[in-house]
Each structure stands twice: as C-alpha cells, then as structure tokens.
Amino acid sequence: MSDYQVERAEVEFRAPDGFPLHGTLMRGSGDGPMALISSAAAVPRGFYARFAEHLITVHGFRAALTYDYRGVASSQAPKSWRQPLLMRDWAHLDMPAALERLELEAPEHPIVGVGQSFGGQVLALGGRHERFSRYLMVATMTGYWGNTKPRFQVFSQMNLIGVPLAALLGKVPGRIGLGQTLPGSIFREWARWGRHPEYFFADESMDAARRFAEVKTPILAIGLTDDPWGTPKAQHALLKYYHRAPTEIRWISPAEAGGRVGHLGFFRSAFKDTLWQPAIDWLKQI
Image (cartoon, rainbow, N blue to C red; front, side):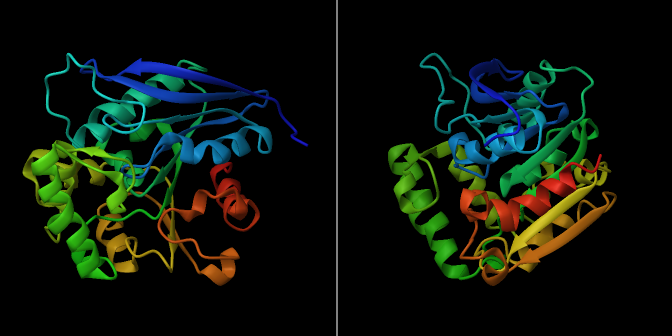
C-alpha cells in the first residue's frame, strides 16, 4: 500500500522559442523535494512513470515531472513550425522550460534532478544548475563512439545506418535500436558530436566546457558495468568537465542489481529495492 497519495496530470508548456512540449506531472501529498526527470536520448517520458510515482507514493516527494524533448514521442513539431529541430535545444530550451513548469507547483521549494544518459548533460547545458539541490545521473556519458563497447557496432548504428536514413527519410526510425523515431536534423547533430573524441565539447557554438565548469551541484553518477554506452571511459569523458561539482561515482554490476541492467534498465521497477532505494536515499539528503 502507498504511504502517500498521488495525482497525475498531463501538461503542455512552451519552450522559450515557443515550441510546445508535453509532460506528465505527478503531485503528491508529501512535502519532500520536487523532482525533474530528464530522459535519455530518444526515450519517451512514459519510461520513467513508475520511478516518478515511486518518488511520490513511497518517498513523499511533493511533485515529479517527466517530459518529452522536442521531436520525441508526444512533443512533435506543429505543422506550422519552420525552424530546424536540434538536439542542443533539448538542453538549452526544453529542460529549462520543464523546470519552470515544475517550479509553478511550489515556488522556492527544493528541487532535485534525475537524468539518464543525455539527461545528465542537460544539468550544465540548461543553465539552471543552481536550482537543483542534488542531481542523480544514471548511465551518463559523452556519446563518442570510440568510448563505447562494442565500438564498431555503435559507430555503424549511428553513422552507417542512422545518418543515411536521416538524409533519405528526414527521420531515423526507432526500430534501428536507438529508441523512438527522431527527426533527421536532431539525429545528424547527435551523430556529428559522437564522431569527435571530445563530443560536443569540440563544438565551439555549444560553449560546453564553460557551462560545465560553472556547476557546483552535488552529483551522484551511477554507472552500470554491463552498459555498452556508459563505459567507465565514456563516463569519465563527461564527468571530468563537472570538475567543480562534488561528485560521487557508484558502479553497479548485474550481480549486485539482481539482473541485467544495461544502458536503460535502471528505471525498471524490478530494481526498486536494489537500485532505486539507495539512489533516492541520496537524493533526499538535502
């Protein structure tokens, strides 16, 4: 039985450039922190629904918001939209808009962040890091193919399959194994960054190194030893730029988790006792 009540609402809000975004807001009867949950690339917000509900009903969080980045799942471009969709806008525009929507629930209330994969990059790139009391990063890394394992399988998925499909179809179907279908313009930017050893830190227009160096938010970075994307090398390639943030790193094996986890499995409810519990305990230390 749940200790706290939960109320769910489907919400729509707009990014600073006017793009319409969709989210699921869960409100609770507790007075714990509020949580913003930022997805991995091409993963729909519904994937995190059970984790968000668990925060509310078991741990007494006041609210939790999941949302779809532009071009993903429910946050599709209106027919009248004429601007190119870019991956950078997930962090620069979409995450800050989601945070602003969550803040409406209780201005000045403590907020923690949860980010999987790309969702750990938005902490710095979104420019609102000071609003988060703590930030949990799961399977977070840069997307450089040379740090993945097996490397050439990832390179092929992204560049020999994905990029040609983006050019041919204007989109990349999710069935190639990279999540939801993505607009071609978003996928091409992702693939371009992933071909460079320093990922988007080599893209001067991102100003990423400076943004990351400003972050002082305490971070818990969880790595999974069976994750082909978030290898120790790939994780370090990102976390080294968060050099002013107090950072704790925890590596978890399938044996410790109680089953295979991989890149996305952390948020499966089967792991609520082995993986969720200690991570949420850390988040609540504010």
